[in-house]
Image (cartoon, rainbow, N blue to C red; front, side):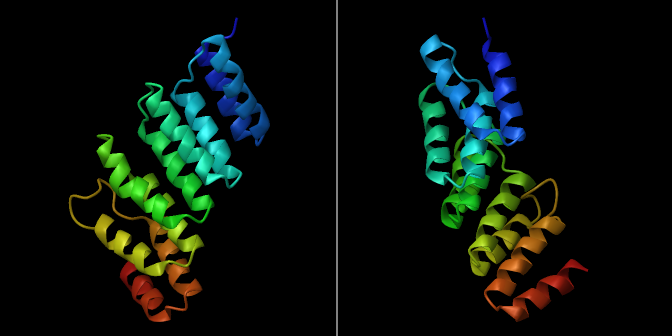
Length: 175
């Protein structure tokens, strides 16, 4: 008889290997067998929906896990932020990273913020990206300062929006 742990490992492996149908089918198979998904399974499902561009299903899966008694961890929340980004839903990604993660008594990390910045970049939303970059760069906000991925996402958003002056300022600031 499969355990919750073995199902979680299998779902994560399928998701990592791009076999998203298997990950989703396994999660659906677990419920009628009284195998409640763990954080590994839940993260695999949210990531799977995100990689497919289905941000709404990813958010639904995040909410369903919370309602089902599984308290989302930062990895699961970051998967949801990334899913919103892949769906070009920068506002939802920002909300998750800046408001929802702290509301869950979790501390957003550079992965959280970079996923939100990438969401802004995909939509050419340079102003919210720049505001977030400035906010996360403030002393005491993060243990780790914004990295090259952070700056590159904002520079790319500026480039896409033809905000070239801001791009140049960011390049200068990065040096």
